[in-house]
Amino acid sequence: MKTSHVVSTAITPESIVAAGAVAPEAVARYALGLGDDALVLAQRLGEWIAHAPELEEDVALGNIGLDQLGHARSLLSYAASAWETDEDRLAYFRGEAEFRNRQLFEQPNGDFAQTIARQLIASAYFRALYRALSSSADPTLAAIAAKAVKEVDYHLDHSVQWLERLGLGTSYSHGRMQRGLDAMWPFVDELFSQDAAAEGLDGVAVDPASLRAAFDELVPALVERADLTVPGVPQARGGGRDGDHSESLGPLLAEMQVLARQHPGATW
Amino acid sequence: MSATEQLARPRPADAAARAIWDIAATVVDPEVPVLTIEDLGVLRSVRETNDGVVVQITPTYSGCPAVDAMRDDIVGALAGQGIPARVEVVLSPAWTTDWLSDDGRRKLGEYGIAAPVPRRTDGVVSLGLGVRCPNCGSLHTRESSHFGSTSCKALYVCQRCLEPFDYFKEH
Image (cartoon, rainbow over all chains, first blue to last red):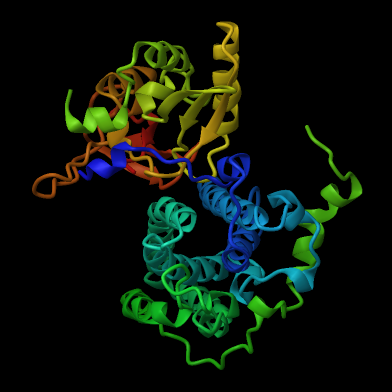
């Protein structure tokens, strides 16, 4: 047990804001991209509530979305501290082209197998990302990541269990799972492509390309163990970090933002 | 007091700070109301500043909505004793079920929630033992869902008495 842990330090965005500290501008831009990834995925997962194949999966996907929302709130609050704004303004009052999420996270839920495929890719990516980010020189990013990594480990476990059940189940479930992987795989490369906001932040941000080896070591083996095939499909052109999105993001944001925009400042 | 216990519940040595800690420590988890925030290991520190008392708590999970209720309850409990306070939510060091008190584990069981199987990190890796049914005590149980009614729980079912029950996930 490290004795340094006995000393608790105030590192949440809200306490940082309360203490008058702000994220450096460059770090805020980096945190914004990561926060948007988590926020958009949380919103997608929320769409499953009351629609999943069984009640337990309503609960599971809702819980995973809640964890993602927690990560998004921490990251966006921290980003907001640099710009004298707050998490809600960033979430509800930015347009589509101002969102910086990678395109995987905005992809439609599709059927349950497609959601599991997206979760598999996302969880394996987040696991590698947050492991690396937990040793960031920025103490706020490091703390958010150290908290998140345990949660995404559990999310990965959930998606692997379903990957195996569906892949090794009937020929019908196997076919559906393979189609889910085929639909989501075009968005894999973008996760590891350049993130302009990470550049010049050596020791603070994680170079996305450095996470590819951990992903490649893990995911293809999991797919093959479930008797499925790693799709050999062309990759989408990407660009989410620059505000380029697929047609799926607009409707997602419309649903997420409508209440806040129609009733600005509403509370309950 | 063991090192783990000191890490989990750093109750201040200073008498004034300890009195404040003890008031904050009466607040319960709104979703598991048999546990105080001290039992949970969620209460992290209290300190007096020029503009009132600052209480630090840590969430069990990043998105845990109970945090807002706990924050209000702490402010209310201290205000009831004439002490103005504000609450800071800290993420580091990250909460773990190792911080649940022995008393808290016992209270969970009596409430019908199976306590997490403790994890030892200071020795050889322990085997994952079965989760004991809080109703009949049988170890013949199985997980029916990885996730439960709150972030910190999973659903189990007992194969002997056939009752479903909540398991407080080891984290």
